[in-house]
Image (cartoon, rainbow, N blue to C red):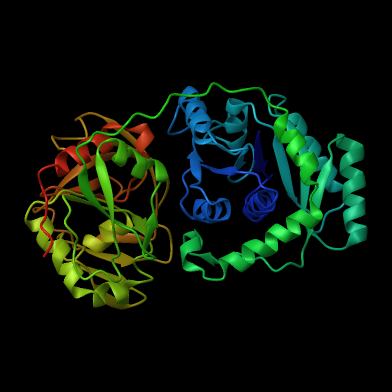
Length: 455
């Protein structure tokens, strides 16, 4: 079974309803495999927590249709339902044809769509909206509607009757404006699940609301009316030789695709967690991966952990391979300026970072690999994405090199990204490992033989 939860536009309530559906279906004993359309770390953190298994990303910018279909099939093994949360509006994509849209994902996977409608300040017009989406692309099967932000029973009745009369689609449920589950925002979007201790109560509340107000039997019937997909390839056994690769995993650094970590393990890495806020030293490792997150929010605590900052700086000076993305780049800087105050970071790389109230880079990226380096073949095209409010300042360009020439995106300065320093690659570009399998193999290979003895 598989199903897409989509909407006419962003902030319609897709995430809330998808989370509630996962909780309610799990309470029925179903195993739900969650997916998120597009490059995203925050929504998947909530979906992962709700489902009890890692949320996967689906993106046609990163994977061609046949690879995306295989990725979906392999991920859904041992699951009863693959549930995909869309992004933005159903047909919103990169171009006039809507490539890489949620609709394109649904077409690729031959997957029915349930449309979430923000019904605030609407009655009969909702039917016109649904009918437009229903007829826009006949290849996309919109199979039902869930109403959100319904004011009162009379409002719900008018919405139901209008939609079902004019479109022939079933209204599967309705959620009122008054409910207990609200996910707070932050400058990069929704707050990661790991930071909100009340999330379990909130998930229970939204699950109960969905169970009480959505026809789950009808929804599952829709999800079951799909053709079989090819099973996809079997996972390969990783090498017996294991390279110990440290990964910053804590409240400050949460932005990791599960596919990236799995690719490293398949390449021969033993992932060793490092807590940047609490660990006083690095464990015995041969390389380090520092992903994205919110180091600025935890800047005071990062600064206070002097011994770990010094250990990272020393390890890089001694030649440890390090791969750092966005928040990881910020941690490797000398200093971080946030809300008018400077905080000391590791000082491993010769630059400072300052935060801005506006995004400095946002969207998909395309990077051309220039020059010789141990991470990617020269001339390779690297696809990724970026979303950062920080920018690099006071960079000593004589002391570093740059891996990427920016063809799409912003990176460090609109021209280059991927700072090369010693055996470190640090940039704003977030990479999706299945798109570039050489990344994991090269990072693990570089780390082999570079063991740092625990001190």
